[in-house]
Length: 91
Image 1 (cartoon, one colour):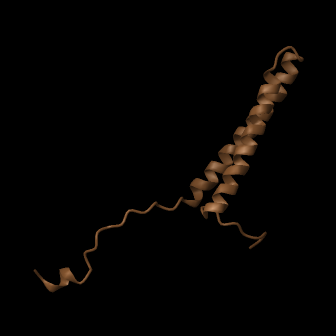
Image 2: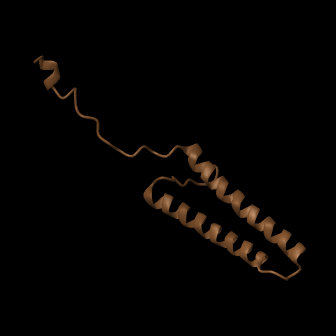
Image 3: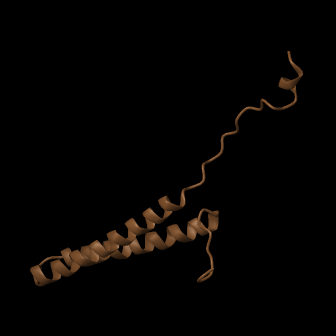
């Protein structure tokens, strides 16, 4: 066996989690924001169309609040785990 093979050059590949791409993080946050705006718009539509006769407005606003809380929790979790690196304004 050649000496070059025994000097540690042929180590087995370690399995590590691939870092999350910045554009994927941005896409996820923008998708959450679009869903929040969509639910806000649907609540306005249901408010105008139903005239208080159904609970669709309340349901849409509840979904908007749930999505907002989920987005905030995901950002906090991302910062806590180091996936998201916070920075100062203009920094």
